Image 1 (cartoon, rainbow, N blue to C red):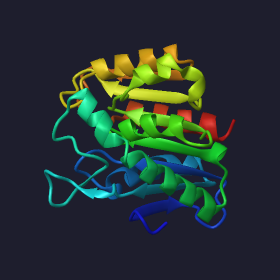
Image 2: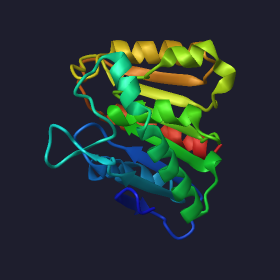
Image 3: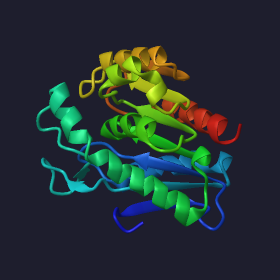
Length: 217
């Protein structure tokens, strides 16, 4: 648990489940931990953990990044995310070990680049997690999941996106949904009309309901 600085909220004595929140490009772990305050009342045995990404952001002196987005061509982003994925996987394993929570009781919540990390890393881990909730993100190398679906772990996924997102276009939601569904994932989600690059109340509520479903079946 020493590799990434992190923030936590909730029951850290004997949690029954973990929600790990992954922030977006140029932000930090404090940003998403505020979601825990919205969800904790209905998830009393859950510990929420929100780490800072491992790299100082290339465009911000105060934020962090999971990988460079200076060049956003698909092949370059894929090259950049590959060394970041093992860092996240180790953090998840460390959280599971430290708090004695099995992988099937761990969910990932991502925003923007954090969603990219979640959707890329979780299928490639050694053990399947409970699910992924992704806001305003994208799926990198979805074709790999389509080409060899049996090579990747399966788990429920919920995606949320704004129709007016000018940072990660809503087309990325449609693409991710199509690839994941084609690869055999249980994937659901919604597009919020008029919403930009952010999370609204409807997204908070539907995200909470998804987490309750996968962590408390």
